[in-house]
Length: 288
Image (tube, rainbow, N blue to C red; front, top):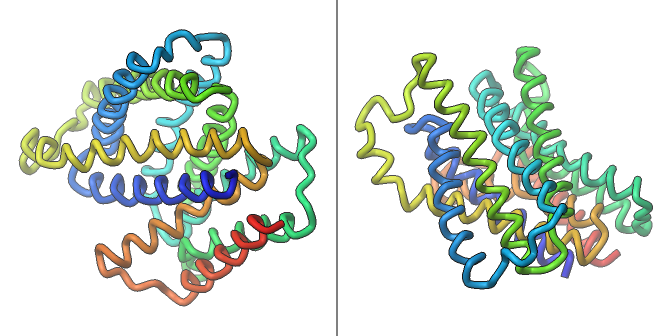
């Protein structure tokens, strides 16, 4: 069950990142974050009311609040780093956030078997290579590296925090709802400050019409992201966090394949090799 839900997480996160990346080409990143997370919050609110999730309220929801506060900061840091580029270096560095939940798992006493340890190493190398890193000739600004490391730490922290936010399915719905509300509060505040400083909340060409036309895609991104958080939480609760975290971190492979299938982007040799290694690591983790 751990492997199944963790792989579902990587699929959902990969598709959400691909969709979010496309949307931010025309719409400001903060607007994408706020609108997509608002859509997810509406759906989750209905689910919480229908399932009686409010009865699961407790101190553990502070983990969801923390995850909701860290998430937008990590996402915006990552987007800014991508803008500074080069993407071939920044993207795989962002996946290093898997070190946070893996370290937490080892600290609390998890000891994967020999095959699983091998799988962790192979899968992490595969994920980094699947991002298509530019191994040479790629000048990188120090600020871009710093922003990427902040984003990676944030992504890994969200994985660890949301896994602690609930112990039941209905409690998970409530935790994800609280996380989304916090996302909106933090992202909305950042958007307000950005607009006050002269930035735009809507695209220059088309304005609100562009956002309305992209609403189905924005809803998909928001729901895919929240579903990924949910499946990861389940995976981490039913098996070793070290295994769940590494399998869930395979999302860059999904993003690269989506770009290949939808946009016709050709995979570089290093990306194809990385995808293959990621698959081998997945098999080792699942069978170990």
